[in-house]
Every structure is written in structure tokens, then in C-alpha cells.
Image (cartoon, rainbow, N blue to C red; front, top):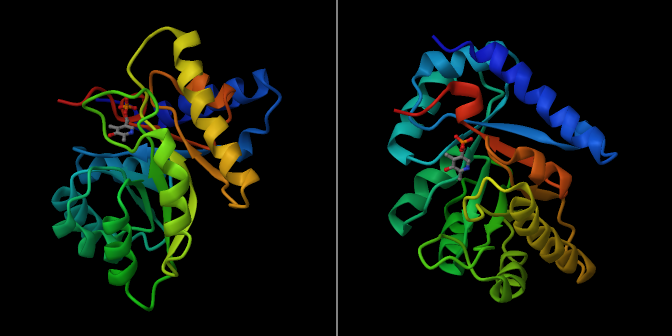
Length: 229
Ligand SMILES: *Cc1c(COP(=O)(O)O)cnc(C)c1O
């Protein structure tokens, strides 16, 4: 059995070490536990170890878990990190506090329109195809400013930042190059007057490179819960 509590401690130590290596304060970095495909027991083990933020990308699977846990653990924050089709926006708007994978205005508008009135705005990141991969989700760098401008007009969304999944590589210098490109874009947006505070970048295999380049939120699955089946 995987020792989830132990793994969370180790991931937190990796974050601290990576932050200190570049003179950053580790408290600037949020650990998002990616619990997609994991059973409820694994999530409860992580909660018991103090974990509060969870990310999911399969909607039906996520809704079952959120519903099951909401009474016992009302303070959890659920982050949607998967591809979004139009027919999913209503459930996402009702059940998630964060969405990291916004890449089209139409989807942003639907999330805005469908956010229940009694809930605070959805915290949103724009997903950027930072490595310009044919098959990858996210919008091209050149289109981010326009989409950000439109999202900023939507009252039930709060634009927090940018998210990317760079092309997979084990080469730290290559990892850093992609993350640096996302950070540059983020800084350009803030120079234009956006008040972004979130760079959602870094996963189990590249969190050190992401933290070195300014990540404020790392999305960690495997290093917490073990290899996915
Ligand atoms: C699955 C997933 C992760 C976690 O990846 P690991 O390599 O298991 O840490 C992070 N971000 C997104 C968008 C994912 O889908």
C-alpha cells in the first residue's frame, strides 16, 4: 500500500528545497493533489495528512467523490483540470471552486452564466499550449491576451493566472525553458494591468523546474498517490 501521508511530506520537502534553492518563500506555492482515478480512501488519507486542494479531470468520477465527501469535509477546494466540453460546464460551475483549463471564450461565458448566485466567483486559469504541440490542449501564446481581456469582463469568473503542461522531457534545462516562457507571458499580462497571482505549473516529474521558474501551484498526482493503473 502506498503511504500517502509520507508521500505528501516528501512532496512538501521537495517544494521547500526547490523554493529555497532560488530564494523563494515556499509558502507562495500551493500543493494541489491530483486525485483523478483514485478511490475515496486515498483522498481521505490525504485529507487526514492535511491536504485541502484536490484536482480532478474526469467529471463524473469527480462529482461522485465531491458529493460523498462534502458533508464530512466542507472545507475542501476542488480544482477542475480536464478538457471541458460545453455539456459539462453546468456541473463544473456548480461543484468546483477552480478551473485550470479554460481555453475558449464560449466555455468561459457558460461557466460564468451557470455559476450559482450563492457561490463566489470561479477562480480561473487560462491553459496555454506553451510548447506549441499539435495535439496539446491550451491556446497559443499569441491568443492569451485577447482571451484574458474577455474573461476579465465576466463577473462570476475571477481570472487568477495561467496553466500549462509542457512537452514531456526529463531534461531539467528543457523543462525550465517551457516554464520560463509561461512566466514571461504571465509577467506581460500583469504589465498590461491584469492582477494575476497564479502560475499553475509543475507535476510529479518536473516540480523543481517549475518552482525554479516561479510556479505558485504545483499539480501532483503520482508522487502522492503512486502510479496510476
Ligand atoms: C494527471 C495530471 C497531473 C498530475 O500528473 P502526475 O505526473 O501524476 O503528477 C497534473 N496536471 C494535469 C492537468 C493532469 O491531468
